[in-house]
Length: 499
Image 1: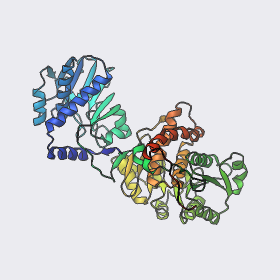
Image 2 (image 1 turned 90 degrees about the vertical axis):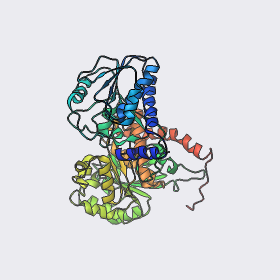
Image 3 (image 1 turned 45 degrees about the vertical axis):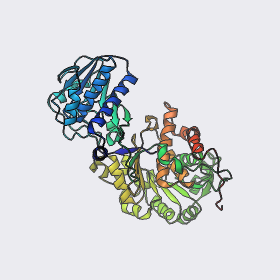
């Protein structure tokens, strides 16, 4: 099943709904504390532990974890920032019979620390000894484990609420990841994130926010059927730039072919035909001299990628308009986005919900000026961008966000730093275009393309250049194929559509 990402308010509502169904707060707290203790025991050998407990239910989770670690023979000391203020936390604290002391602004000597001071719902900056401890803990060489989220980090943005916040090597959260566990600033503060099931159940919100994993889109992935042929596997076309700007389009075309599109054609200005022909094999080549040629090419395509090194200016704008009047879905990237920086509304007027925009943050700012900086976080910005554009928006980054006009959104958690290389985004555009050409729904194709792209980057690692990426896709697809076979019970269906 796809895994939801929740806001703090949604998590609070899930807790309340569980209580309304008859699960007590004490039971939920016990399950949470046990999950923390088990995560520690699985990853670390016996060692002295200090648990910093706050006054609320996050502190209550800490008292439960302390009790269960002590039962297993661990040396545990609890340091409390204040007396518990919630009934459940008071009861949890009363059951703790081990060593207890006041919170100090300097970490007490130990070999492992657990931050149970404040959960994801904190809305104010850290103060006093807690703030001083947060600064001092940043210098620790021993591991720090956070319960729910490092204290002082906003659960909805991943940013520090004030000048300082705790950082963790491991964070144990409950039920679902929160936004802070997924967005880059929060991920850096959380370290490894474990999601523990404490029995809250799912929301079933199909228009919510999800982790971008194969569970989200694998049912719609366009695996070839037994009697497939190249035209049934989709027709992708990619618009090339002039003679001095052809490599980016070729990268996108090769990516579309590797991801499974049956026929991929590079549409080339006459001046670039020779240079493109010298570098192409399975990718086909066709000339275009103007908007009429592009319109005809688009009519004979399932998807078209436009933008990689296509040139910034009126010509690219006119070319996009010509393609937009066809039945092909558009993947709009790079120069095709920047060409509309002075009139984003003109771009939006040409798009429909099957089209995909793939901006990096700089291009996003050109097309949606002020939106990224003015939003509380990237997911909100991408969702609003998709609503304005009436198309799917993929906002690139280490925490790539894909948003659809209907409100669906997903965040990638498998981003790879090795993808920070010239041409990488062109390959991503080709992956997405190739999947759409094969009949995959555009939002799901953007999610799948982003996930596969990141997996390719991570698989190669150091030394990656963009030319490597298309050739890495088959191995990633091969890992996905058993899931499809499991779903179809090992059979490949026949395609009964007419060609």
